Image 1 (tube, rainbow, N blue to C red):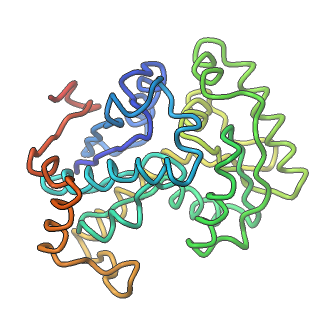
Image 2 (tube, rainbow, N blue to C red; image 1 turned 30 degrees about the vertical axis):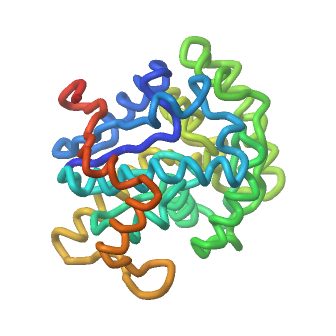
Length: 282
């Protein structure tokens, strides 16, 4: 099984995070699974981390095209599944309408796993403006009634990166924020962004007292495995009923992508990334 992992970061520019992601994949993925890491185009952001370049609706919507394009490339390149490895699930709905391989969202997978572990889901994150989007997504997934407090940490992306060398300040900040969420009623916690989640996983932080901490990255990888197995073994695939799920005619997709100057990237057949099992692929 081959999974296309798509990050919202330019992941090759943040080696501490990249290496932690690789270690996490090697820990949680099945032996027959190859996960190939893909980041955003190197020209997308002026720095290593998107920050406020993803916390406005219009700006994030511009980034959506890279996820949709890469879903088309992944399917044409023979991947079995795509994992959108960012909690806002950028491009998830659109990608699912265009390809027949499973497309799994980090946010949706972690929310559903959390809903099976507890009754009041708390989120601890460091990008406060995403709170509105996360609530909207939870409602769309049918889990709005189970999503409780969203609490921000005092540390951000670069502090989390530094935490791979000096973990205790980041652990302390996360626990402090998680305890606030628990005091507000949360009985299961989802780490809000990929870097924080992977950091916690590397530190073995899976529980605060009686409250579980969801490993959202692992939840996404396992959901990829499960949905791919269901497709192969049981023929279960995405619904094509209704406006939000119907697959548009291929000729219409090609015509309009060409009109908007999007089709050339697909024809280029780009398949680049870092394979956890096979090293760098160009």
